Image 1 (cartoon, rainbow, N blue to C red):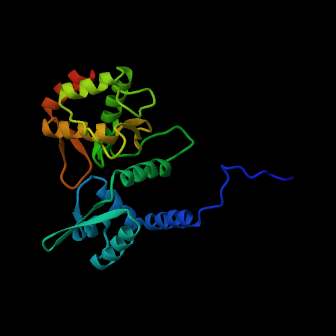
Image 2: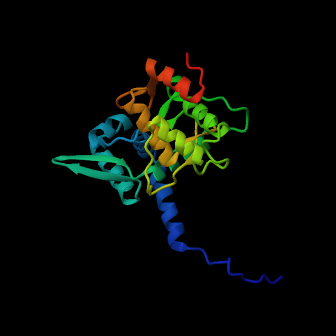
Length: 236
């Protein structure tokens, strides 16, 4: 049987396939995964701090960081004599968040094994994740703040963001809004520029606080009142 070659057919892109395999290989080591997961809190860490969280020697950490750097998964920032490492961007955080979800996939009824404090509210790089974030996202969808496909704020949503003081980037270099799959809830929370704007507002208002060195966040008393009012949540 002969097959006609169409304009949509193409030969495999060897360079792309090689690049994909190198990235997958870089993520495959458990110690490097520990380093990447630590960096998911959106902050910059020193090699010494990452060595401690991964439970490996400093010399070994250096080699792992070099591998992650060479594959574009992390970046290094130098300030004086100190070097700090962070994820290369929100796209890497999204990749890791999705990988967590795939890794935890189970065809049986889903039962989250995520610790309660992380399951309720945590950071996903530069935006809020967990049960609380999913509830806020559901509210925004139901109240028409977000387009039905989750890929943009509606004019009404933009007005509400302005009204609550969440500052959107007028010229974002990424999606203005997107649904980010929550790996503990298996539903979507708010990502993109809108997700970052909301997270920034919550922190600036003191409605949530971060736990130093960890991804978990806590809702303050004033935050429970404000979030209940703004997003019709029962947080009492």
